[in-house]
Image (cartoon, rainbow, N blue to C red; front, side):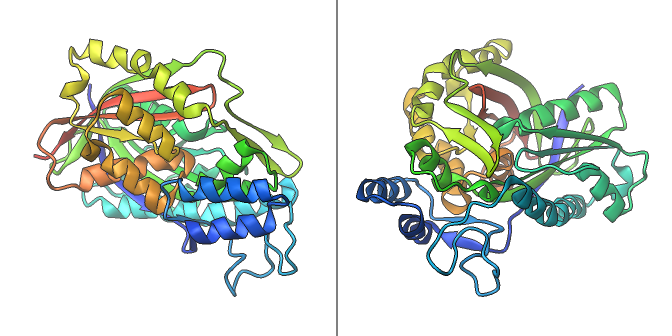
Length: 367
């Protein structure tokens, strides 16, 4: 039985900063050496990012007291507890807002139709988990099934979609709400190591929700066809993080783009073999924009046209890397595009700790 994404809603914090503004602030507050200032300037200037949204309001007159960037010119490193308290304060209403927007956006499904809620986040914790908060605030039945995927990183939307597909295949009336929310900026570090500076230059905050059922809607939608998972060998230290005393210590190695490129063909081959297609049959590529270099390597490896990655680059430019939510922002752009032909094939892909490559073959249905 097929499963369909009916609609996608996206939400970001009101506060955003231009990448050039953040570049100069990081040079002022974090860099203690001329070499670090030069590295920061180069990384931020070549990131492919124009602006990023964040819950951190340190440079806003309403953002008092500041969290990281203090008025006296010093940089603070709040404890993990303080950061997680802020995550709870900000994430709860954003989870609810995203869920409400996703349901309200769909004219054929009401909140009473929701049978399962899957929430996704790797940037904070609280219990009862976010699904409980959504049910309480939106007035859903307490019997609504709740599941939470945590600490999986940027590829986590894919196992969430696979889980939703499984529910729909086993239960004909299943209507699954998936909400991915990440507040990555809470884990900003003062480290001058290149890997930490790369992480600081790309991560941002945002959320997205989707509704999946086994019933084909009457309007445009995505059909979920096939998923594939691959793990690159001996690369777990190049994309990983741990919980430290001052937030989550994220590592995004400068080798990641090349590691992804070298594993792409093996990762996608099962999809092509199962559906007896090749990469020339793919109309669009919905690639998680983990960074500009990642998109460049994928474009080069598969000899893609510029237009085939235009939405991945657009999301990177306007939002940065919002971890698990980012791929749904890309898919939202593709779903809204009026020029896409009926039953065009889309290859979606995201990368995360492991180094794990998750991919999916999706068909856009316009009529």
